[in-house]
Length: 346
Ligand SMILES: [Zn+2]
Image 1: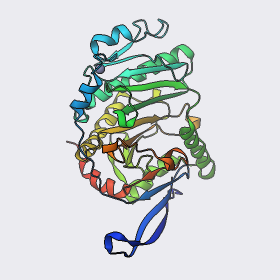
Image 2 (image 1 turned 30 degrees about the vertical axis):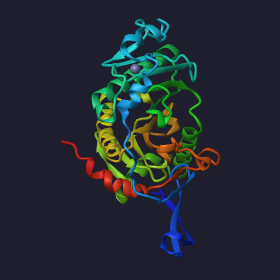
Image 3 (image 1 turned 180 degrees about the vertical axis):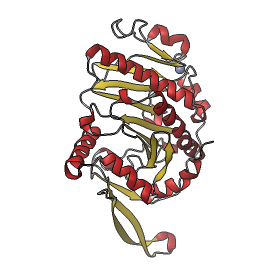
Image 4 (image 1 turned 90 degrees about the horizontal axis):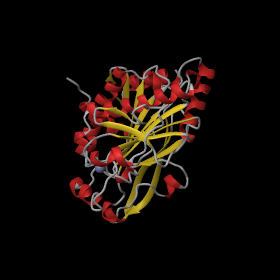
């Protein structure tokens, strides 16, 4: 077992105007990601407390131009179709979900999965079946790509839920693409997972989950074959949660039970966000291309918000954007303590 959660505490001294200019000591932390060793900072500034957002008003504003290409009356006429060698029907459907080619592709095989018939889907309506259908419809597309090309590469699924997470359309939709270029972060995870295997003869992911469970500081619980932890070094300034699909490598390895288990475990995370007036998140799936990559499929949910909602201030400032240094205002262990009681399923 060689999983290290390294944190370096820092103490800042200043004369505090809030305490009649008496000397005050403020604590912060620099943390190292246990896999990639990338650094991030935790500076405990405030409680998790955000102003509520009127999502119905946001929805009305988004339809002010009178047109949404993803609404049911438009989606079949204004979105592209796949060539027939990929799909005889032209699109993939499951439940309310529909998958079609991305007009602005990220790679040779690039699609969009519209999650719902409803234009506005508040968090409380992201029910397990809706999530399961959207993810499985996306995987059906990946299976077709794999069958056609005899190769998939990395099957990436990601989600900008609501504008603070980068959504340009409010109607919920996933970005889905197959690529041999997994992106800088996943590539770093693959390199580090392979190096861990070389050094220890073990899977990082098995040891990581064992250690998180033993420490019980950030571990939330299991749903079926999926284990949930709050990230030691969040990407976002609020919190990140990661769901690990145990011993699954490619996105094509995910079974119906795996996807159902993920959709079920997502519910308490959504509930926690709603309880704290967090209305936006990013979701990304990180798969291996082949077992040699040695990364177990995991999904990361990163809560998104505003540094100052009155000014619509983005939550990505110079530290994140220019130095590529994550910076969070809340201790992940505190988030886990609060979220864990929600991980009870009947
Ligand atoms: Zn719509």
